[in-house]
Every structure is written in C-alpha cells, then in structure tokens.
Length: 235
Ligand code: TMP
Ligand code: ASP
View 1: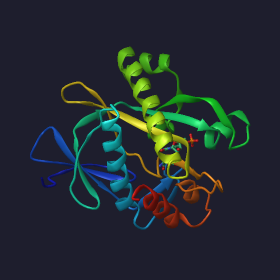
View 2 (view 1 turned 60 degrees about the horizontal axis):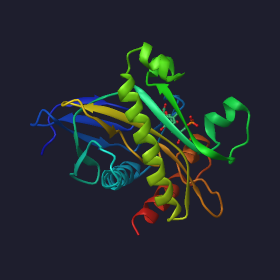
View 3 (view 1 turned 135 degrees about the vertical axis):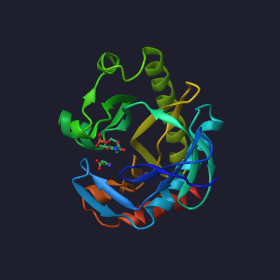
C-alpha cells in the first residue's frame, strides 16, 4: 500500500490517503510540542519508536478484546490504519497523581489512587482542549451516550491491560491519553497512538520519568527515556 495525497499534518504525525478509501497511512515525525504547541522541539528517533511501540500496544490490546484502528506496520515510521472519524474527546485515565491533576487540585505528584480516574477534554486546539464532562460532550454532540459508555469501558480495559504489562517491565503506568474513532462502518475503535508522548511512565524502582515530561519540563535525557521504554518493551 502506498501513500497518496497528504490529508492532514498534526503535531506529531502526518496522515495520507491510500488507494483503499477505508484505509489511511499515518507517518510518525520526530517533532515534539507541548503546552498546545507553545513549546517546540525535536526528539531524535521518536517517530520510529512511537510508531513501533504504538503498533505493539495496539496488537496487545486487540488480543485482549479492545478493537483498534491498527492494520499493518509498513516501515519504521509508517503504519496502515483503518480510516476513522476521530471522536473529538481526549480520554485521560490516571492511576497516580501527576501533571494537570496535581496542578488543578493542589496535590503532590506520585499519590496512588484507590481506583483509576477518567476525564475528558474537548479536542479543540483553539480552545486549548478544555476539560469537559459527559453531559457537556452530549450537549455538544461529540458522541452519543452509548458511544461514551463504550469508550469508558474500553479505556478502563486499556488501563488494566497496560498497567499489568508495564509493571512486568518494571514501569509504573501513571496516566495516559487515548483517542477513539468511528470506522466507516460505524464501529468505535481505539485510534491515535500509545507512546511516551501520550503516557506517563515512571521506573518502578527509582520513579525516574521515562516519558515526554522530560521534554515538557526540560529534564534532559529525552531521547534516552524513549529508548529505555522501547528497550523494555522489545525484550
Ligand atoms: P496532563 O496531566 O497534562 O493532563 O496529562 C495527562 C496525560 O495525557 C499524560 O500522560 C500526557 C497525556 N497528554 C497527551 O497525550 N496530550 C496532551 O495534549 C496532554 C495535555 C496530555
Ligand atoms: N502535544 C501537546 C501539545 O503540543 C501537549 C503535550 O503533549 O504536552 O499541545
């Protein structure tokens, strides 16, 4: 399958049409942004790692009963996926306090919750992806009630699968962001990516950050963190 017209360029990926109207090719870049594009940079090799890692995670999740957009990896940076219309919700699951949760509620990072939390942001760059609840999402017609229920079920299932998987690699899954899409035949599937760009990973022993927070917070060792996560999932 070959890339035809470029349909879209996002902050971290480009999307191309293919000869099959139901399939697209996503191409992962090394570009990194944070704070709604205010901070810009390059993480050398990130595109290759995020592509391969995301595909491994999607295949694992498919096996565990979560439908995804994944079809086939084409090269180091390119993957064939089902064409979906993205549900404009960022779905965030948290196991441990960090990031905007800590900031918003004034709590330290690193407090493990009794139960995972879920929250939604309205995926809209102009508005800065504001936090919204399910009723707002319904009012804005971003998804139906049934679709939101399914998305919640899948998101918690993703958490169970990934939390256990990463712990077996000596990594704590702190939180992550998912996006879902609707296929041309109307099915809700997991889309976008699962990578150190979209998850917080802390070493289970040292609590060292092994994710994009190293870039967001200028901690150094950004590439090494992505490489370390990739090394562990490749064992
Ligand atoms: P937050 O604590 O900044 O809300 O981030 C929660 C999780 O979502 C974290 O794992 C990073 C991820 N995330 C994205 O994937 N994209 C984004 O635009 C933001 C703000 C967070
Ligand atoms: N990628 C997002 C942006 O640039 C934010 C982030 O991941 O922190 O807005």
